[in-house]
Length: 143
Image 1 (tube, one colour):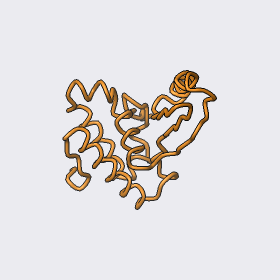
Image 2 (cartoon, rainbow, N blue to C red):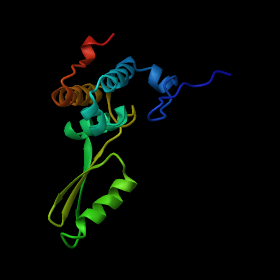
Image 3 (tube, rainbow, N blue to C red):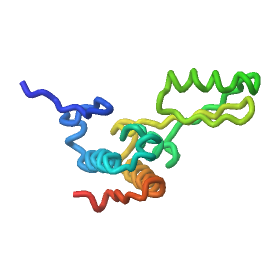
Image 4 (cartoon, rainbow, N blue to C red):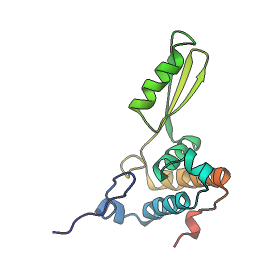
């Protein structure tokens, strides 16, 4: 019986039919791993894994859910933000006074997004990554 290969960072099954059937998705995740592997030390501290980089890029591209939470007081906001961060490790939280805005990246799975959505979102995400890192990772240039 053949054993599936898994991504060392996120645990996704890389050799399953779901991933092998869509070469564009495979290239996107390969590009992310390559870009992450070429980050300088400062950017690697900001994005400790390619999954962190991907989730931040998806949020910047607008492929995310947004939740607004009223903390009750300005002093309670950081504690509530920390609780959300523990529960949803890749979320981005903006605190303004006692209002928290929580951004969580949506799934890029095939059932969650159509191919044209994937192409649009992945290009926006790669553009944002290039702005942040200076590394160009266009899908059209990937082999």
